[in-house]
Image (tube, rainbow, N blue to C red; front, side, top):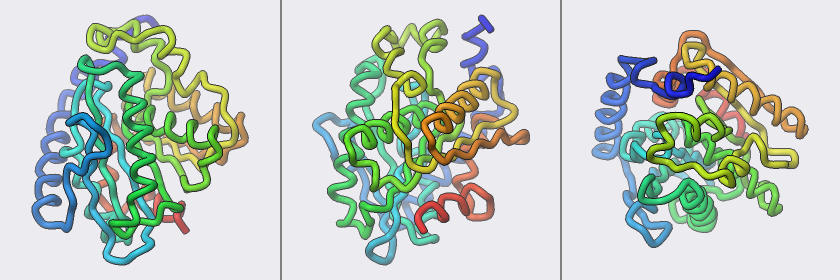
Length: 272
């Protein structure tokens, strides 16, 4: 495989992806307008380091923290508020995190911001009825990369017990090919950042892991999800892998919009 631009060019692969992004925006605006929410809470010093929190009605609720994708250079938490409605109605407190984007900051800095955001959430989520001992981390695309980094770091530092599970949707876990694609014009991926990719980091047993990728995605996205699943199994992690033939890179994350699918049930089961 040497056509790396093709592997990461999602607009060409999924020309109707924009329709799903518009649906995300509309449902997210409606969620913020009609649900109890606390928006743009700062967890760090820059304008990008904010989180939106949609609290559960009852205290000591499980927590779902979502991290968006966008190749480290695009998208925003405001496009993913729609996730809150089905999960708050199921008893979760939901957090949707933002971070600064390339080229203003490096991938290394983006990772550090998300690590800080997770630590902030653990310390403060009780203010919004969340139980910091029952957190499910969920990320889409490079959001899955960031979730994997947070989880690896927490386990390495002996603090992984608060993470019930990590849910990795259409993830990137290896920056090697990214460096060789058109994306590097903005990202400027360094060799040390490649070496720090989740796929290469030595890790101990991780929290329960669910990896989901669309069968209609490019071969590289499917390959990376398969490889990370094998890595999780190798470090004795309870990992479940699904390649859903009917889904693509955009429709995978749309599963989070509904309570009527296996993903919602799995996330609920993780916190019981």
